[in-house]
Length: 83
Image 1 (cartoon, helix red, strand yellow):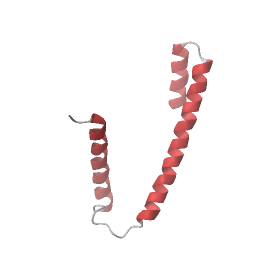
Image 2 (cartoon, helix red, strand yellow):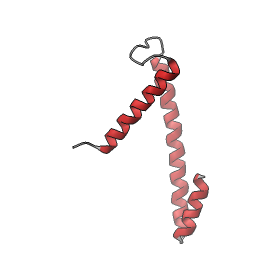
Image 3 (cartoon, one colour):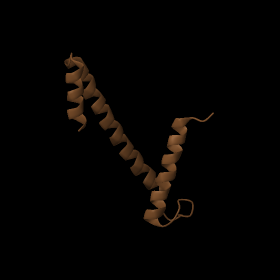
């Protein structure tokens, strides 16, 4: 049995690798010049920003759920938020 979630992530890793190879002309395996500690720190900093954005959106949507009694109005408000 295969896990579709895992397969989706593996596909994304492969796609990301191909983008990197095209952009930088080398594989991660062969590239020993970059400062990977710095790259990791920057990526993790970005991740915390994305996490905060998602938490803010969740909070806004939670407030909307409490405000809007009508599902159609709630749906319209959420569409405005994410568009």
